[in-house]
Length: 97
Image (cartoon, rainbow, N blue to C red; front, side, top):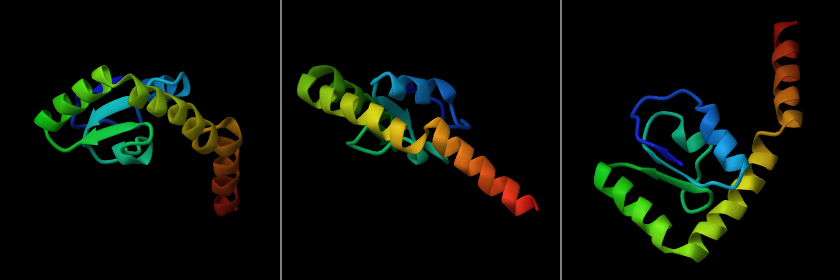
Protein backbone atom coordinates (compact mmCIF):
# COMPACT_ATOMS: atom_id res chain seq x y z
CA UNK A 1 0.00 0.00 0.00
CA UNK A 2 1.43 3.36 -0.98
CA UNK A 3 0.82 6.80 0.51
CA UNK A 4 2.24 9.43 -1.81
CA UNK A 5 0.74 12.41 0.01
CA UNK A 6 2.84 14.77 2.13
CA UNK A 7 -0.20 15.66 4.30
CA UNK A 8 -2.45 13.06 5.92
CA UNK A 9 -4.23 12.53 9.16
CA UNK A 10 -4.53 8.95 10.31
CA UNK A 11 -5.41 7.20 7.05
CA UNK A 12 -7.75 4.37 7.99
CA UNK A 13 -7.11 2.63 4.69
CA UNK A 14 -3.45 2.26 5.72
CA UNK A 15 -4.44 0.71 9.06
CA UNK A 16 -6.84 -1.62 7.24
CA UNK A 17 -4.08 -2.60 4.82
CA UNK A 18 -1.69 -3.35 7.67
CA UNK A 19 -4.37 -5.41 9.42
CA UNK A 20 -4.66 -7.51 6.28
CA UNK A 21 -0.89 -7.97 6.14
CA UNK A 22 -0.13 -5.44 3.42
CA UNK A 23 2.96 -3.39 4.26
CA UNK A 24 2.73 0.39 3.81
CA UNK A 25 5.30 2.61 2.12
CA UNK A 26 4.69 6.31 2.64
CA UNK A 27 6.29 9.62 1.96
CA UNK A 28 7.14 11.31 5.23
CA UNK A 29 4.49 13.48 6.86
CA UNK A 30 3.77 14.32 10.51
CA UNK A 31 2.29 11.22 12.12
CA UNK A 32 3.37 8.63 9.54
CA UNK A 33 5.78 7.06 11.98
CA UNK A 34 2.97 6.62 14.52
CA UNK A 35 1.91 3.46 12.70
CA UNK A 36 4.57 2.73 10.06
CA UNK A 37 7.76 1.38 11.62
CA UNK A 38 10.70 1.32 9.20
CA UNK A 39 11.81 -2.20 8.31
CA UNK A 40 9.08 -3.67 10.54
CA UNK A 41 5.73 -3.16 8.76
CA UNK A 42 6.71 -0.81 5.95
CA UNK A 43 8.71 2.35 5.38
CA UNK A 44 8.47 6.11 5.68
CA UNK A 45 10.56 7.70 2.93
CA UNK A 46 12.09 11.16 3.25
CA UNK A 47 12.39 11.75 -0.50
CA UNK A 48 10.70 10.71 -3.72
CA UNK A 49 13.82 8.80 -4.78
CA UNK A 50 13.84 6.85 -1.51
CA UNK A 51 10.09 6.21 -1.92
CA UNK A 52 10.65 4.66 -5.36
CA UNK A 53 13.69 2.67 -4.16
CA UNK A 54 11.67 1.21 -1.28
CA UNK A 55 8.81 0.27 -3.59
CA UNK A 56 11.25 -1.59 -5.84
CA UNK A 57 12.85 -3.27 -2.80
CA UNK A 58 9.48 -4.56 -1.60
CA UNK A 59 8.38 -5.69 -5.05
CA UNK A 60 11.57 -7.61 -5.76
CA UNK A 61 12.31 -9.20 -2.37
CA UNK A 62 9.66 -11.81 -1.56
CA UNK A 63 11.19 -12.86 1.78
CA UNK A 64 11.38 -9.30 3.03
CA UNK A 65 7.83 -8.56 1.88
CA UNK A 66 6.58 -11.62 3.80
CA UNK A 67 8.48 -10.47 6.89
CA UNK A 68 6.85 -7.00 6.67
CA UNK A 69 3.46 -8.64 6.11
CA UNK A 70 3.68 -10.81 9.22
CA UNK A 71 4.81 -7.86 11.33
CA UNK A 72 2.03 -5.68 9.92
CA UNK A 73 -0.70 -7.89 11.31
CA UNK A 74 0.95 -8.22 14.72
CA UNK A 75 1.65 -4.50 15.11
CA UNK A 76 -1.98 -3.64 14.34
CA UNK A 77 -3.22 -6.25 16.84
CA UNK A 78 -0.90 -4.90 19.50
CA UNK A 79 -1.27 -1.14 18.94
CA UNK A 80 -4.64 -0.58 17.28
CA UNK A 81 -7.01 -3.22 18.63
CA UNK A 82 -10.51 -2.40 19.84
CA UNK A 83 -9.27 -3.07 23.38
CA UNK A 84 -6.58 -0.40 22.96
CA UNK A 85 -9.14 2.04 21.52
CA UNK A 86 -11.45 1.41 24.48
CA UNK A 87 -8.60 1.92 26.96
CA UNK A 88 -7.73 5.20 25.24
CA UNK A 89 -11.35 6.37 25.39
CA UNK A 90 -11.50 5.42 29.07
CA UNK A 91 -8.38 7.51 29.74
CA UNK A 92 -9.93 10.47 27.94
CA UNK A 93 -13.18 10.09 29.87
CA UNK A 94 -11.28 9.98 33.18
CA UNK A 95 -9.37 13.14 32.25
CA UNK A 96 -12.64 14.95 31.59
CA UNK A 97 -14.00 14.16 35.07
